[in-house]
Image (cartoon, rainbow, N blue to C red):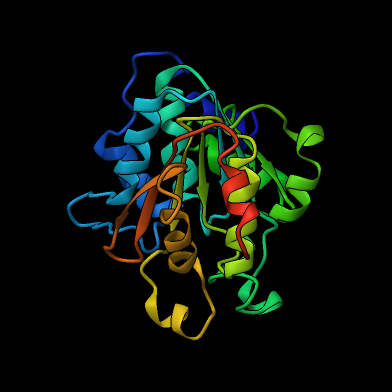
Length: 249
């Protein structure tokens, strides 16, 4: 039996009505999915925003979740566990596996090339019992959206954006997701509270969020300004992306 098969035997089969977040599993999330900037507290087993990600996905019961970018898989695992416990849904994970040492700080917010090897990627998610829920695409989000129908397809009900944090890239990722959403789609934007990086224009998440919030007929948003910050955005109308694309960039 290989390592991945052994890991899969340690977790319960996917079925509706479950609840994955035992103290043991939360401890494993801290050890192996390594939250960074999610208002977490390891000593008290408090996943911080991770509970928000899990709770939103349990509540919405999405059929398709898209995650753009993750250092060690924290957001992916929290969201995928919710889908597993719902007994419904698939998660598409997009990350080119950049390293800050190899690709520079303008390409990644501290990435360490965790997603280079497909076998190791599957083993990481098998540890949490979600290897059958998550599909990883090792490519940039621009490449992903250019090939969306071929590599993925379908409507997005929930998206998590945590890739390249420049204003232009956050804008492109947001629009790429919203174009494939209808009314009552939801997006989470991580790192809304990194003011120094915003000031030096190393990041533009907060700036983009302010622009989205101006379109009150198309979007509503709430920001949680703790740790690195996260915002939850609700799409209020079909074709909402047209409001943003029609205005200046």
